[in-house]
Image 1 (cartoon, rainbow, N blue to C red):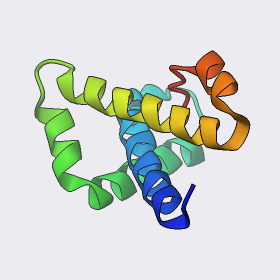
Image 2 (cartoon, rainbow, N blue to C red):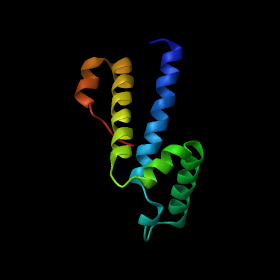
Image 3 (cartoon, rainbow, N blue to C red):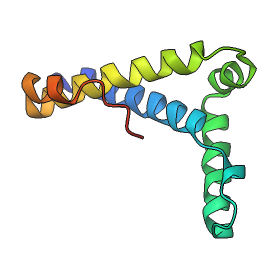
Image 4 (cartoon, rainbow, N blue to C red):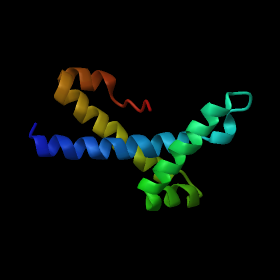
Length: 101
């Protein structure tokens, strides 16, 4: 894979990994956990909100799960492409659709 293409895929992978993680996580859902863990989640949320304000706004204002589904689909396909490039198509097929964040 050409370096420019791989860099673009890696950039998009980070974006959609961040957005899927953001939608799945809630800093308020850590009762009894260390304050440092909750603070870390709040900080990560703030970083994602700053990096992708339009996308986060779309997630937060959506009454359905369309935005989260779109982001998840993008993440799954980007995971597939990166896996196929690194380990071959068979490994990518076995792992698809991987949505681990």
